[in-house]
Length: 244
Ligand code: HEC
Image (cartoon, rainbow, N blue to C red; front, top):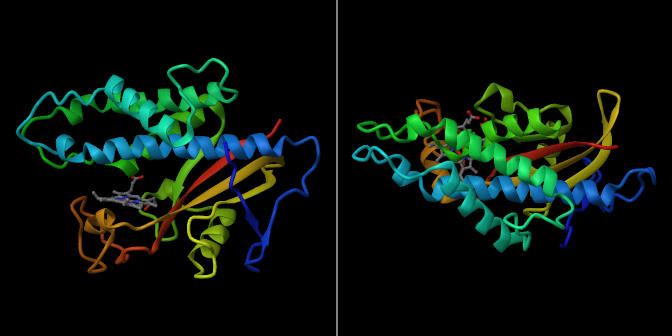
């Protein structure tokens, strides 16, 4: 697997690899694990997104969008992207945490069944961002690894960026930052060493019905739209992995 994480000196915009870390830190492993977790979370969100019309279909009760169905689709998508096959986790070094995230994603869909299968209601609030947040919260309880969706103009209070995240988001929103490039840094949180990785996300056409213009108008969820345009920085997935 290719780890394509580059670090950037905050504010300066200079590309510098992050090799100046203590040698006891298995930095490569942590960063690679973070990248896989990000891909696995994205796979889950994508499966929800691809079935949004089904989930929002008011004419149907039982939709067959079960946790088992989600898991199968996520495993396939994740394998296509990373070549890691979670249906055969033996021999996958990170299988413990990856399976924990898959399990968390399943649980969100399992708990969502009454909502998803409700007939007569079109928009149920079961959307990729909420799915991702809930999966991240469950995953944190299982593993102690933080997996969070954040943004500068965040909606959900729990998605508020911390100081580190705010700084990296500012850097991501700078036109000089190479599009899509992740940021990784070994640092301390609460006096403990952690690896932090952030993966920028950009507004695509499908996001604009809720996050686009006109700014301040209410979207389908009843929240004020942010006025993003296609290609704007939307936010980032932020991972915090405690280091041994
Ligand atoms: C159906 C409306 C809707 C669409 C479409 C949508 N979002 Fe969101 N988005 C939301 C809601 C609602 C939240 C708050 C989620 C929560 O409760 O955690 C959110 C949260 C977010 C966040 C986390 C920060 C925050 O605001 O709390 C990011 C980043 C984000 N969305 C990006 C996107 C991107 C990128 C797309 C397109 C791929 C997208 N959204 C599509 C409604 C939407």
